[in-house]
Length: 292
Image 1 (cartoon, rainbow, N blue to C red):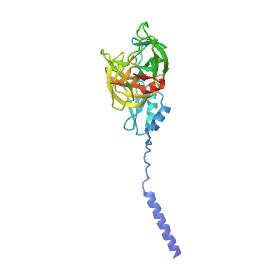
Image 2: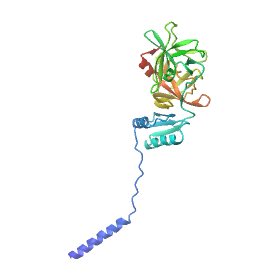
Image 3: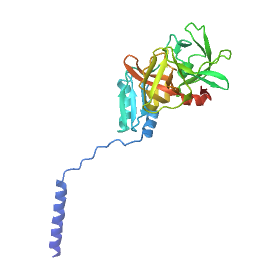
Image 4: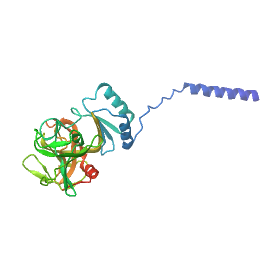
């Protein structure tokens, strides 16, 4: 009996082994990138991507929009996409029109050294009057003029912060009549500015500048990071307003609200584009000044 039982048990084990061997091999599920938070994605981008011509921001839907311009090709584009692919489905990649650049150039306007920029907002502190403009403009010269020939003195640079930030403060001469607190609309009229605030997504905005005058658009993103050719700027407002070289430093506003200072972007005012702005509230707080 015992011998018979052992034979039967061995037969059952052998049959079981044969049936297991006949099963198809299990296939491993493809490994998906982890679903990372926008904060984690942004932190990784900040650490690993420093290529000029790239930018990123968190969209209202929580996904991170990574942008690149026409200069990001070949190995640069491969390196960028190698990073974005590993960050998972919360990343959206887009190509910007033209080249991502600061809107400063040589020529006419608010002159300093060899460049032209646009005046932003007039501000004051304890009876002293200043002009806010872009930091990358302020880095170019210590003395600023109202004309191309450098005959009409505008003011002296008080301080500039660029890169990472993009704001500068020019102090007006004490002997001049106090300047008005409005911004020029390039149509013979001006808009009085009384309050500074941070805009929301979708906010209608206007931008004025010496090169292209007055243009409008919408706020499409906040807290954007941009890699220019000479440095990174973070915490920017992204908009659909166009701008061109020479418009740097010009004001972003709506009615009596001041929002930002023109930093840079891509495209132009013929075909449209994307423009980034330094939030004005941050600049005001840094310098302890206010619009009026």
